[in-house]
Each structure stands twice: as structure tokens, then as C-alpha cells.
Length: 248
Image (cartoon, rainbow, N blue to C red):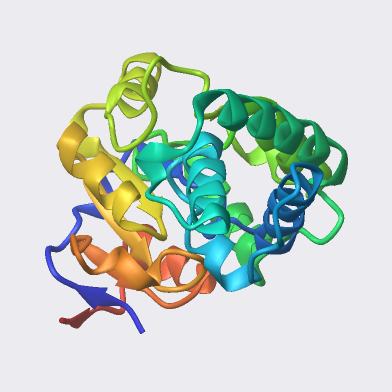
């Protein structure tokens, strides 16, 4: 079911920007395994997968910091910085080798992207472009997109280390708008968490929330303009003339 809090003028959209983890892909198991491998390497007990998954969305340094804090029973701001740097390096190395062990694209993602790609032909005269903006480091982000046959749908795949600041800072989104010539009112950010909605708000663009994946625990703390229950609903929500909205 598509719920509308503020109607998006989809006929004007030129740029569709997708989050990655929890939006296009379910990467939870590989992320959890990699964090627990790092904790084990540094003599800490493993954490439950749901707890680690709740830390996803703000980038690897934040996820590793919060995991170390819980493992040591201390506030996140008291984690030793040298330990954090070493644990983060171990995590990234381990994740680089295991990023596709269990990760997969959500059901309906490939089909929806294929349908949305046809909008590039612009039958209504408005060319459209798709891109990925994630807080995951860019190298594994691109490797995963290539491995899961997603990369070909996107003009750019940018990660948390592609710009000086991560989401919800709007720098990455603004850079994409500059590169594609899209104005804020012609851009939509699609993601599963509050971070994605706040990124959209900070860049003054439209937001489409995904009520699946990792983020629904906090997604509605900053409600998106439109909310969908599955990737299959992206086409109804974003293709002009297909909208089957229900007012929220």
C-alpha cells in the first residue's frame, strides 16, 4: 500500500537517488558477521544480529563504534579511538572479502529498476537518471551492485567516503543534482531510514520512504513524503500516470 503524506509531482522528476542497505539490498547478515568477526578478533563476545543491524545506516565507523560500546558496556563516546581505528580496519578488510556471502537484492528490486529505467526514454519529454547514495564505503558498495547486477541501472554509485560528510549531510545529494542538472523539486531520495528522509529534507528534495529493510524502526520519526511497503510499489509511486495512492 502506498501512503501519501505530501504528493510528489512525479511527472517533473529528473533524478531518482536510492539508498543501498535496507533499500535495494538486504546486507544484514554479512554486516553482522563482519562486525562479530571484528569483535572476536579483539577479544569481545559476539552481539545478537538484530542489535548490530539496528546500528546500520550512519556508516561503518558509527556501526563499529556502537558495537564496541555495547560489547564493553560503555557509552559510545568512551570507546578507545585506537581500538576503534583497528577494529574498523579489521571490519572493512573482512567485509571486503565477505560482502556477498549472504547479501541479496530485495524481491522486486530488479524488476522495478528495469521499469524505472525505461523512463530514461522520456516519452513525456523529461529525461530521468538514477543513482545510488549510501553511507557504506564506496568500494564495497560498487562491488555489491556489480555482483548483484544492479550497477548498470545507475549513472553513479557514491559511498560514505565519496564526500567529506555522510548522509544526512546533503553534500552528496547536491553533488548528484549538480552533475545531472536536476533541481531540488525534480529530485527524490528513496530510502528506508530517518537518515535518508533527513538527507532529503536537508537538500530540499522529495523523499520516498521504504517500510521494509533496516530502517522502519525510526523511519517515521521524520515522515517521508510518500511511503511504500515493497520495491514493487516504486513503479506505482514514481511513474507518471500509474499512481495508486492512498492518503495517509
